[in-house]
Length: 233
Image (tube, rainbow, N blue to C red; front, side):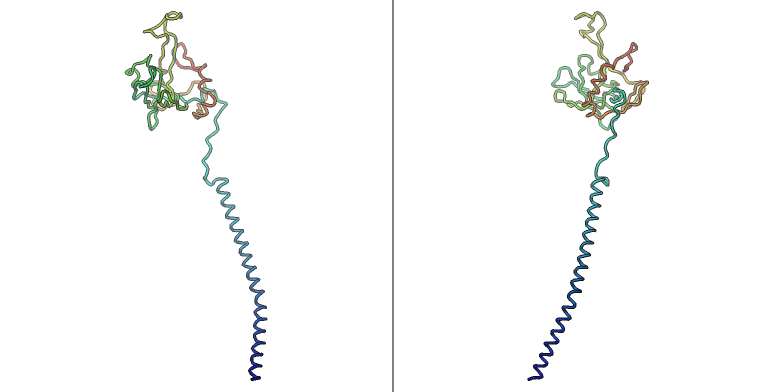
């Protein structure tokens, strides 16, 4: 029985030695965990780096944001801020809800014709309108004219009817003024942009800029025809 007890004691001692060896090994495991922690920190660095990459893409864009439109040239003459396109009326009809308006479809060299309303019924019949070559102010904001959305304006010249200047005098066919289309240069195709002799090439404003800066209104005072009925500014 004693040897067994000794053996158990020996086993007990052996168990103590094993526990000591395990205790000696545990710090290594803890060191390994710390090492793992080091890898964890490294992992965090990688994530931070990845986040930095994400910020770079979002910040300077990597193509995420659209490019800004070129800045408007405010130093050019006002008339060069407008866009005058050669057009041809391909369809015309009477506005159903307005006594003075025609509705037109005008070829200005774009994929679809421009739909424009014009107060010309007192000056032209439909037959005279159809096929007419003219100039369209093409960078104006669209306007609703008695329920018809008009995408631009046709350019006309107006002057008093021949004769006296008194009221009721000098009228031609009951008209107190004559209104005529400004005709584009001969041979100019639809869509061609008209320029002004002696002025720089136009850099048209956007419709929103034309509206905000009241560009068309500021140009009206200088838009005249000369003695040869040529449009000038």
